[in-house]
Image 1 (cartoon, one colour):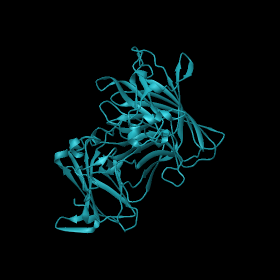
Image 2 (cartoon, helix red, strand yellow):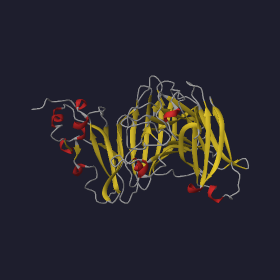
Image 3 (tube, one colour):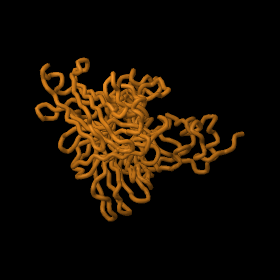
Image 4 (cartoon, one colour):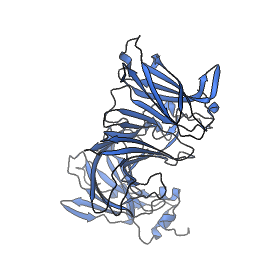
Length: 465
């Protein structure tokens, strides 16, 4: 007989063997409702117990744990010896993808949650709140209780309430979730600080970036790209668009993009071509992007991007969130609202030309490469580019921080019906350079702004163009 284990001692495979019994799903016996909910068992990585309630006819009733809700499997049968079995999270279902019951959202672990749109695979996650992300002493708030409102017949959205808690803050959340081609969540939040909090992250997104088209080193992996998200996209309060390719750095990097009343930001997966990933199991080409749309003015602050070094694709290493300039202070309610769009594309795309490719290599020319230079090649397409006259003269407006732009060129890219920018950049080893460029016609920007950081200590000669 296997030795009894407590839920937290379960191995990854043991925990995965625990299956929820679909017949015990909330609202499974209601053919007139378009939603169902089932639950996760506490155990493995998910040691924190959550309380669950159903709200119907104006009253809340607890959802009681019953052992036959779960099929524990042969490996995890010993979990029945746990003295106080409990729930760790919940999962929501709705008819989609050709199925009568298909999951579209999961709330599991700390304040993490994730969702998918039609035909997609799970990838990146959102969090209720981030505190000191990427800094020493990071704090991880957690959802401790959930209240599911019973939908009415014909409802196309379901409402979930959650109570968040941590050492520094408590919060009340309301999610109104509508699954579809893109799954949309309308979120209202009231936060109450227990102490002054300055490095707070609103609407945080967590993702994974291992390798992309700009990181082609000598790697023994047949897959050209490995990532849940390829870039950070920002729509500023002034209606400018910025595209920042992600990277897997050698050390923690934090980038900040200041703005006032930002219109939106997100981690996106523009490249949807399977042949650029070649992964039949992970299907990175089907991972959703996540766009944050503030509701009401968020005032002054910055989008903060945290990139952490990661040895493999099993670890999330990318975080993006909004940090307001004003800190949270005790004794005051901090209320904000936003909308999340989980899907293949943001709900609004720039009418300008978009970045469709970023590539890097040794600077100089083919007959005379210069390892002291880094070459960046940026492809722009769409927007007004395809309608430009053949003899038009575009200009690339490029700048750099902690680096020198030695040469810049822009050429028409006929196969893409777009234009290609070439930049040769010099930076000192050990610096933290950042390069930016935008296409201009008659001194007016006609593309989104492209920006990137890199580590000049990397030997450029190992990155063939």
